[in-house]
Image 1: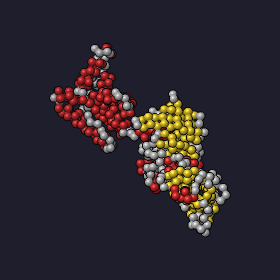
Image 2: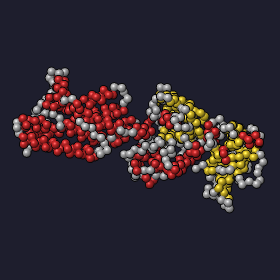
Image 3: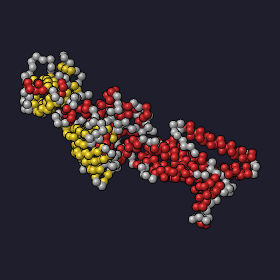
Image 4: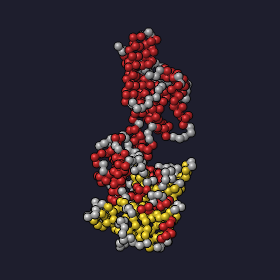
Amino acid sequence: MFTDADIAALLVTLKLAGLTTLILLVIGTPLAWWLARTRWRGKPAIEALVALPLVLPPTVLGFYLLVLLGANGPLGEHSLAFTFTGLVIGSVFYSLPFVVQPLQGAFAAIDRGYIEAAATLRASPRDTFFSVVVPLARPGFLTATVLGFAHTVGEFGVVLMIGGNIPGSTQVLSIAIYEHVENLEYARAHWISAGLLVMSFALLLMVYGLNRRFKVVGP
Amino acid sequence: MSLEVCLRLSRGDFELAVEACLPARGVTAIFGPSGCGKTTLLRAIAGLEPQVCGRLKLGDETWQDTDYFLLPHQRPVGYVFQHAVLFPHLSVRGNLDFARRRSGDGPGPGFDEVVELAGIDHLLSRATPNLSGGERQRVALARALLTAPRLLLLDEPLAALDRQAKAELMPCLERLHESLSIPVLYVSHAIDEVARLADQLLLLADGRVEASGPLVEMLTRLDLTLAGSEEALAVIEATVSAIDTDYHLTRLAFAGGGQGRELWLPGDRLPVGRKVRLAVHARDVSLTLQPPTQSSILNIIPVRVDALSPSGPAQTLVRLRAGEVPLLARVTRKSEAALGLHAGQALFAQVKSVSLVE
């Protein structure tokens, strides 16, 4: 049913998606909190930058990352092109809006009154964030996690540009499918495609099921 | 100890400029019409309005100065918002624990004491979204008290409640007044609430202090808007001195009133010795030069005219003193002329109706 190469691609994919999601939650949470609260005039510019990967062809993003991370770029001989680390960096940019936007929406929806009430109950801003904001934004965190993960699993263009197709290292499922099709191995392409289809549907079903009240961003 | 307030805020058309020194004991009502800046002032004292500038001191502790601003969570205030603002992700007990865990080591009321005072023992395990309005406010009050505040700020806690819920919360606020020594600032635009709870009054109009002082005096000052209103009233603090069981009447002696200065009130359920507040509306007081001997009115008090002020084209508002206690009477200008009313004159006030403030 699945060859060793397919299993290896699955593991790379899961590792990439898991790590990317984790990094995005760590950097996306403060960014989303800041975007939800700031009245700075430059905010639309930052929001547009965050949203760019939604509209940009992944190959464009991949191309610039290749220029930046490649051997001819500023990193020189420490090039990250065609490495797993390079893939993670690319995925973080690529999936950024899918984590930041649901979080920003969830944070913005929290009534200021709760934050003020927490302050009058002696909770510092940091304390308030973890004991009031995070629990109230839980649907947003769930959406962000699932969308960030699922979107990274589905990425193709960026991976192809900067990660190439090294089995066991940078070959992910979407590329494995592409390769199977190139080699006219339709049955194997079918197995992986159907597997991804079912998994993506299951993940989204979970998000919509758990967050009935919550708006999920579209790609 | 006192609360020294000198705060300014400009926001669009609205300007707040409050300068006042309030005694930090008992209940001080911040009273005024909607939009006069009551809530903004309360928020500024809690540190929730960062654009406010000026000075703020509680006792010898500075909370705000020209180059100093204590953040809200560093100020030892308890704040009850108009809409309670309980955390929806925590149960009633969770909300109370949130406050208790962060209260520090300061001396404050204990958990059981607060729960009993607020009457919320049976609600502890409930989820907050299912509580009624009155229950929510009681939980919010308990939560604020558990932070061991040195100043309690109440922002119209009764305004969003129906009659029934008000009747539940009011006794709770009165117990608070009696049993805890935490000074309270109470924002309200309802004079009956103020008459019931407040000891001092800070009158706000258009973001400025109109006047401030002890409630009993403020209510009867003829130069203020309060006395001029249709609902003008005087508050008398009295003690139940006897019960007439034959006629089901309660006799009340009022402080500073002296000999013969007592009032009768229908009903016989109050215990002797209980301190109560009585409201006497200006429209229910009439004046007579001789004590009537054949009248159905029970409450006839010897008084002295303190001051007079015209109230509309046909009426005059008269401030009276029964001993030290001020009273208001609204009479027609015709009666004023007939009785020859003038300051210092001794006469009798017939009080048609006295009510317990509740």
